[in-house]
Structures are given as structure tokens and as C-alpha cells.
Length: 93
Image (cartoon, rainbow, N blue to C red; front, side, top):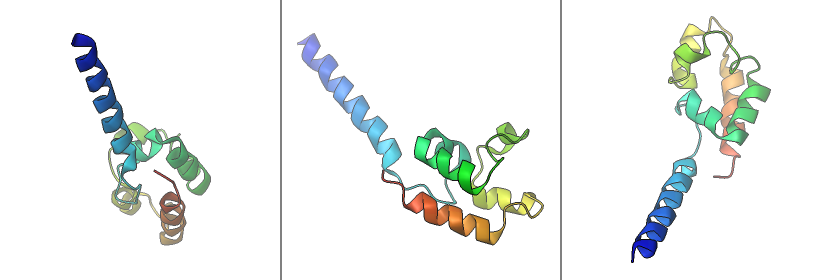
């Protein structure tokens, strides 16, 4: 009986973990959540080089790209964010 319950809990936790990645990644998604997805990190590193290695990353990683844009001193342009949004939308969840 304990084995059945343990197996059920393992399956439920796996389903929950998979569901966490099922949400689409957008410009409103916290940056750290995008980075937690390997494909999302690849998009950020390609489209917004230096973002994930920025010295202040720990200070803004909980914010969305839309939230960070006004504070980026022009580094996150509308065009760059549009490309990023398009590339994030292509990620299979």
C-alpha cells in the first residue's frame, strides 16, 4: 500500500513539474523563469546578449522583460523585445 501511495505521489509531482513548463514564456514572464527553461535561456542569450550575465542580474531576475525595459537605458529596445517575444513563442512547452 505504501508503495502505491509513493508511486502516486511521484507521478503527481512529475505532472506538476511538467505543468510548470507548460505555461508559455512571454515578455511578462519573470526572467528567472525564462532562464530556468534551457530553450528560454538560449533565446535570451541569443536575442539579448549579456542579460543573463549582467552584474545586476540578481536584482532584476524576478522582474519581467517588460518591467526591466524602462530601466535599461535603451538597451532593451522595442525591436529586440519583439524578436525575443517571437522566439519565446516558438518554444515547445
